[in-house]
Length: 134
Image (cartoon, rainbow, N blue to C red; front, side, top):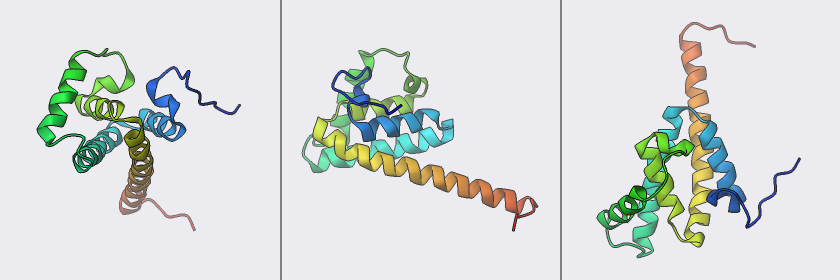
């Protein structure tokens, strides 16, 4: 069954198919991968918000995010880790146009980090004396 994306989406990120897919992959990733992606996401959002004059400094961004974090629920999958929660909150509070651009970057980062982790795992298996299949 094809997943449909409508303006009546249950979650805020389901309104954008790219973002929805990236969030689903992120949710299903291991904790270490989630943290790597969250840190990259914070960096991307911070740089984008400052370069677009949305905020004047990192402190302004952090302050705005802290205000939102204090007033939100804490039962979602991304609330289990403070770094991940901050990154997703930053993303949620971006203007729609900014969020769309960042969603594409986030999707690329998710794929790159997962591929790198898989390659590192394969390298570790080879180094541990696992026979390579020919």
